[in-house]
Amino acid sequence: MHQTNASSRSGLLNRWFLSHPASVDETYFQHMRFAFSFAFWLGLAGCAALVHAVFPALCETTASRILRRLMARMEARH
Image 1 (tube, rainbow, N blue to C red):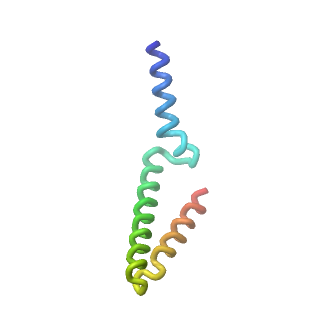
Image 2 (cartoon, one colour):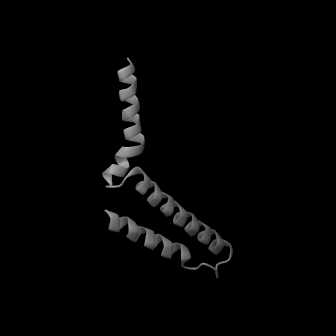
Image 3 (cartoon, rainbow, N blue to C red):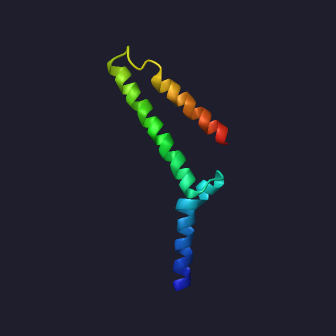
């Protein structure tokens, strides 16, 4: 029974934390860094879009430029 619990924990660890980063040829921490960076730029693009919604003369192309750059990063890594 102890062996089964260890195996199931190992399987969960692999499925939740390791299998996807490995599928894109990254370690867990490399993938975490990329995802955090991506989330930061998405948040910044969202803030720029909110500013633009209220003040149309501001941040006219900021969100779209950030999104294009993020798409280029995604395409370059696969």
